[in-house]
Image (tube, rainbow, N blue to C red; front, side, top):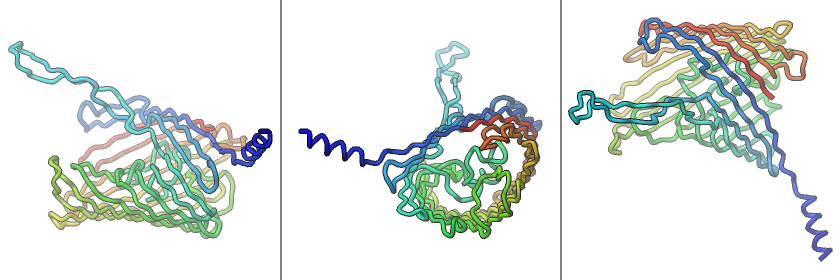
Length: 373
């Protein structure tokens, strides 16, 4: 019996201990936005809109298997119907209206939940829910964004997270990053009816002067670096009506071109986006283009002025709709002397949206207080 216990204890001692790294953030945001030309209910919006908190669990149970879980609360809310009751206004026994009540609800709290197989440091296969690396900004973490939110053009062409799988590689000390994958296609802003299809994606980023991450707040010091990249999405799908019968087949192709540079606290990035959509019903191509550029510069004492412009032209071939954005603000890092200056980030932000085709403009301000650990 003693020999058996000794062998069992030796086996447990040699077993790998799971490694788990826990981090997180809290980021309350206050917004005040005015849309004078909108419906009366939408003309003024004031409150803690866009606030979020996140928990991130990273680790591995045994090599070469790793996991990443990123939970976000508060960033993706909607009004959920909680009650509905008939109303008889004239007391004749007939329902004249329906009284409804709704409450804010969270649509999705999972930003990422993936399992990765990494046999070597230069290659991995990742499956689960994640952001599709279509643009460079889609690869930036929520806490590493220059502004409180991603650029408007980026969110129009592809937003949120999706279920799928990626094969990723990095070569020459991350000077070349590449990925190919397949996804469900739930973040492509297709809302009409029910769709069935597979989204295919590929992306390559070249950093010829050395490893260059996707941290939009840049580094506080470092040599000149630059990066260029391109992403493509091919999403052929079939749309079905409410009875379950096919109505139209669509071939959706999207392309992103990006460029970035950083130099001792200065960070500049920009992207150009293209979409072409063909369907089996009209055979008329639907074109959309968009772009944005942004810059931030770390100054002494932890100040970082930031500026961003962007524009999108949707459905250019039939019903053109143009939207322009202008954002400006100031980030302040009070913990500049710590090992991680971005542990505390305070932001004041002016935002402007001009829906040129509709003649509707919006202006507003926001304030962010972000703490990470």
